Image 1 (tube, each protein chain N blue to C red):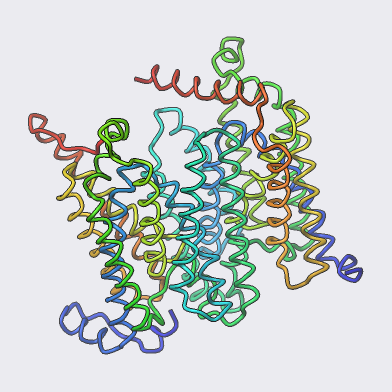
Image 2: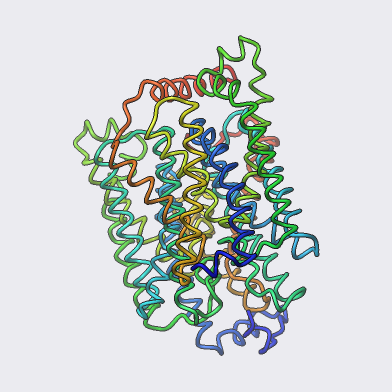
Amino acid sequence: MLLAETLAPAFSWNPVADLREMWAYPFMVNAFRAGAVVAVVAPAVGWFMVLRRQTFAGHTLSVVAFPGAALATLLGISTTLGYLGACLTAALVIAALRERGRSGGAEESAATATVQAFALACGFLFVTLYKGLLGGPQALLFGTFLGITTGQVGLLAAVGAVVLALLAVIGRPLLFASIDGDVAAARGVPVRLLGAGFLLLLGAATAEAGQITGSLLVFALLVMPAATAQVLTARPVLGLVLAVAFGLGACWLGLIAAFYQPYPLGFFVTTFAFAGFLLAHLGRALAGALGRAAPRTGVPA
Amino acid sequence: MITALHQPFFQHALLAGTAIALASGLVGYFLVLRAQTFTGDALGHVAFTGAMAALAGGFDLRLGLFAGTVGVALLLGVLGRRGRPDDVVIGTLFSWILGLGTFFLTLYTTHRSTTQGNAGISVLFGSVYGLDGARTTAAVLIALAVSAAVVLIARPMLFATLDDAVAAARGVRTGALGLGFLALVGVCAAEATQAVGSLLLLGLLAAPAGTALRLTDRPYRALGLSAALAVLELWSGLMLSAAVPRLPPSFAIMAVAAACYAGASLVRPRSRSTRTTVARSTVTRIATVTRTTEE
C-alpha cells in the first residue's frame, strides 16, 4: 500500500524492534487486535465447516459479503455492519432454502452461479456509484489493514465472543450431528435446527474474516487453517486448537509482511495459510513413508 | 442514448459482445447440463491471475488469460477423471491462486504502469467498452470459432452427457470429447472475461443456460435458446447501460440475466421434465460407475 511506501519502514529481523515500530501506529495495533479476534473465530467455525463439507455455503456467503460491504460504504455506515448484515441475511436465506428440501443437480448449480454473479455485479455497481473508496474495491475484495477503528475492533470482539460462546454451547451435539446425522437425529438431537444455527454462526465468521482477508479470500482464514489441522489430526479438541493456532500464525505473519511490503494483505494471508496446508500434507506423506507401522491419523472422510 | 449507439466503442462492444455471448450461451448449456459450473467458477479465479501475471510480466493481457484458463481447464479435466479431488482442496487452491493474482496486480500497478491503476478492476468486472478495433476482430473470430466447434460436437456431446457409458460403448470417444469441451470452456472463459470480467463470467455461462433448461426439455431447442438468451441479455444490458450511463455494462448484463432466470423460475418453478431427470440420474450413475471402477 502507498502508506507503507511513504513511511518506508525497514524490516530489521529484530522482532522486538520491528513490533515496537509497527505498534507505534495505532492502526497497526487495531489491525493486530482485529486479526487476533478473526483468527480465533474463523478457524474455529471453519473447523466444523470443513467437517460438515459446507465449503460451498462458505463460498456463497463470502461472495455476498462484498455487495454488503460496498452498500454499507455507499450509505456511509460501518463496513462491519455491512458485512454482518449481508452474511447473516444470506445465511438465513440458505438455511430457509435447505428447509424446503434439498436437491443437487444441474439447475440448482445454475441458480447458485446466477445468484453469486449477480451479487458480485451488485457490489460492483455500489462501488462505481461511490467514487471515493479508499484503495478502490480491491480493499473490499482482497483485504486491507488500513482504517480499522477501535470501535470496529470492539464490535468484532463482541460478535466473536457471541459466536464462540454459541459454538461452545452447541459444539458437542453439532459434532455428533456432523459426523453421523442419522444416528444423531435418532437419538433426539435437533439436527435441522443445529444446521440452521451453524449456518448463522458461519455467516458471522465469514463476515469477520472478510474484513481482514477481503471477501474473495475468506477461505484463507475460514478453510485453510481448519483443513490443515484436519490433515494432521482427527481429534476434535486438538484439531480446533491447531486450527486456531494456524489461523493466528497466518494472520499475524500476513499483517507483518503486508506492513513491510507493498502487496495486499490478502495475498500474504492466503500464501502463509496455503504454505501451511502444503507443509502439513507433505509432513503426513513423509510420516506415512517413514513409519508405515505407526498408526495413521487422517482426515475423516 | 442515440449518440452512444454511434460511438465506435459502443459498436465494438456490441459486435464483440454478441459473438462472446453466443459462444458463452452454447458452451454454458453443456456446462450446466454436465453439472460442471464449478469449473466455470474456478476458471474465473484463474483468468484474473493469468491476466495479471501477463501484465506484470509485460505481455499482452490476453496471452495470460488464454494460457491460464485453457491450461487449468485441461488440468481439471485430467484430475477429474482420476478420482475427484474434494472441494476443500480445490477451494483452498483457488483462493490461493486468486491471492497470487492480487500479488501480480500490485506488482503491475507499482512497477509497470501508473496510468492503468484500475487494470485489476477491468479484469475482475470487465471493460467491454474498452475494446478497440483489433481486439474486437480477434474476440469475434475466436468466439465464432468456439461456437462453430460446439455446434459441430453438439451431437456426440449430448450423447456423452446424457449417457456416458452407452456413448462410450457405441464408439464415442468420451474422454477426448470431455477434454476438448473443457478446452472450449477455457477459451470461452477467457473471452467472457473481456466482456463481463472474470468474477462475473460464471453468470454469463450459467444464467442463460439455466433459464433455457427451465423453459424447454428438448436438448437442441434448449441449446439454441441458451445462445439466443445470452445474446439478447447482452444486448439489453448494453442498451440499459447506454440509456442509464451510471450503470456499468457488466452490472446491467448480469441484472438482465438474473432477471430472466428469476422470471423463468417463477413461470416454471421446478421442471419435472423427463429429459432433465434422465440427465440427472445418468450423471449420478456415471459418477458412481466411474468411482467404483476407479476403486
